[in-house]
Amino acid sequence: MAAELHVALVAADREVWSGEATLVVARTTSGDIGVMPGHQPLLGVLESGPVTIRKSDGGTVVAAVHGGFISFADNKLSLLAEIAELSDEIDVQRAQQELERAKAEGDEAAQRRADVRLRAAAAR
Image 1 (cartoon, helix red, strand yellow):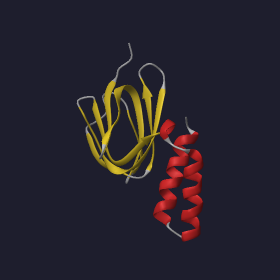
Image 2: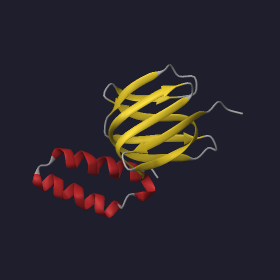
Image 3: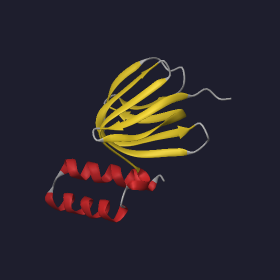
């Protein structure tokens, strides 16, 4: 049996996903990071970006995450996000409309959020 780590992806308003995984890739202020079982303890700040979770059963979970923190110790990974949504929860048409509106208004933060949502949805 492969080594596993327990992952909890939590947003301010709910637990988004929890389970066993073999790899998690997330974007931090220091760059992209991959966490596998046995990784050194870490505490970091999450940037907006897709988070990819390789589940122990071979499946993959992708979520759009907007800010927060990542913490790993004792094979437990916590992703505490300001906002997070699973890729299959994302309405692609609405996200595309939000991106176009943000571009028209010159709202760079809204553009980044919409872009992250679209990238996460494309990875499903």
